Image 1 (tube, rainbow, N blue to C red):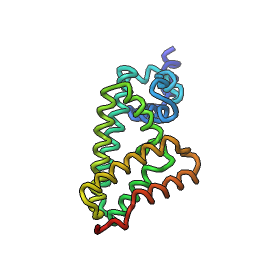
Image 2 (cartoon, one colour):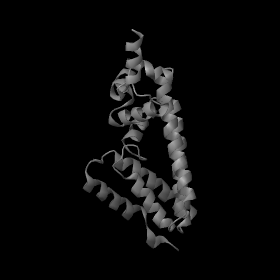
Image 3 (cartoon, helix red, strand yellow):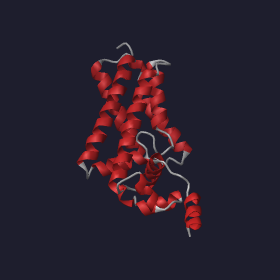
Image 4 (cartoon, helix red, strand yellow):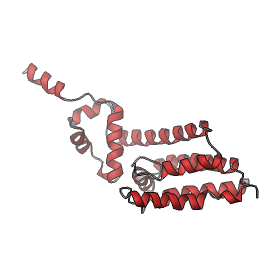
Length: 200
């Protein structure tokens, strides 16, 4: 009956495009790109698969919306960090490290990013976007190290070491282990905040 259809529709919470993207990011952080299925995602969100098609043409459309959301988030975070000049350059570098080495799945270098990097190995378009974001992040770190007093060459070296440590350490990090997260932060700060080099 029309009443039954109406009550069934009203029982479904209205979902925005962002809800689907956020749920896809969470799911990809737990597994891989291949594991992302529209029906599984709809079940997780407690809605019918049909509501997915209000926002996306299909699974590929969702995947690239997820990728674009990550690219925009990373680059907007960088712009926000550039705009935030509070604290010394060393304090800003330390803040950047604390953000990156955190338990949350969506942080730079976190589980979701590792899934994207795995995907980039098999897809040239994804690889291009990942490289674009990596360059923006490395350039920002280089600016911070230069502001902290390092030469241009040293600033570039430390920026690349910074990126390598943040991404590499996440591959072995148990984000649920607070002590391990704190230990990784201590190591990062010891390696990447060479305060004694200022003025050399």
